[in-house]
Structures are given as structure tokens and as C-alpha cells.
Image 1 (cartoon, one colour):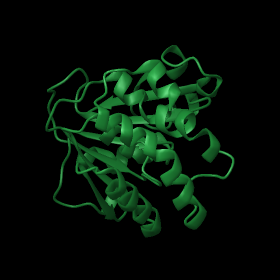
Image 2: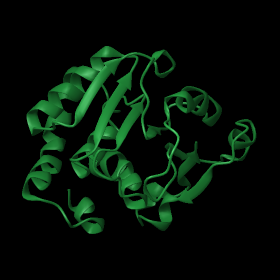
Image 3: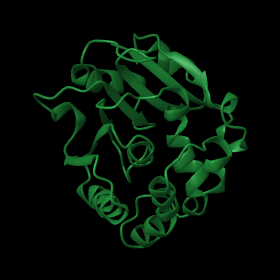
Length: 207
């Protein structure tokens, strides 16, 4: 929890309590339904919560913004972002239903009212569009863009154009060259100093 407050400070008491509650809730649910690797659960705040909040360090979503998190897994980056931006609506999507059960239970326990979930694949979402698609290392960029682009409304109401924001790591040269898009790359270790963030990046592709 302290690592969150190292970089972000303008939280309400409710937000502080919500962030603080995540560790025990995820440890409890992870013992029943494995959504986070056993070795990572002890580093929940750095490897999952703070990593998710990279997006909040780069863009201040306006109230009313609609965001879909595809391949959300245990709720990352969607759940930490939903705590951070209580006036923004988050729709968390995964093809594995039991992972969404964890998200629903965690959200209910901390009183998150701006999160909805859907048991589906991103490419099967029909008749809905969002301002942003977010994702964390779920698939190659070319696939994320193929699935995400149809879900994105055209427009620009904030610092970044409506589009795809994804968190990825490692050498991305070949992955980007195969994607036919040219994302804007932001090294996360220029935002957060922890060793975990070396060679990790936030990518933005505008619609």
C-alpha cells in the first residue's frame, strides 16, 4: 500500500480504504480461484496495483468516460483504475467466468459501483463502444488492436485521443512491426523507479 502513496496522494478516505482492502481480499480469493500467480501475490501492490495505475499517471480520465478492460483476468488494470477514477465507468471483460466472480466479489466488498463485468471474448462484444480500451499483456498488439478498434468511439475529449492503452514488457520491436500500427511508447521506469518496471511500457494507439 505504501508504494501507492509514494506516487499518488490525492485520495479520499474511501479510496484509501478501498486500496488498503485489496491485499487481504485478493489473497483470500486467490486461495480459492487462482487469478494471480502464487509468487506475485506477495507483491500485489507493485506488480498489479501500481502497474495498473501507470495509466492514471499518464492520463486523467474525465468524469463519464467509458472504458473497457479486455482480458482483465483478476481485474487488472480495471479494478485499481476504478478506485482511482470513481466518476468513470469500467466494463471488465474476460473469457474465463471464474475470474469475473473474483472481480465481482472484490468490487462488492469494497463498494465499487462503477464496475461491470461480462463473460465474453472482446471480439464478441456487439453494439457497444467505449472511449478507451485498456489491457495488460493479454495478447500481441496486432490482436489487441483488431479486437479493440471496433469498440472505440472516435473523438478526443482528453489528453490522449480515444484509443487503446495497453501495458506490455520486453523487446516490442518485432511485435510492433507486425501490428501495422505505430503506438506511442512510454517507458514505465521513467514514471516509477521500482526495479520491476524496467523494460515495461505503456502503449497508446489513437483511433
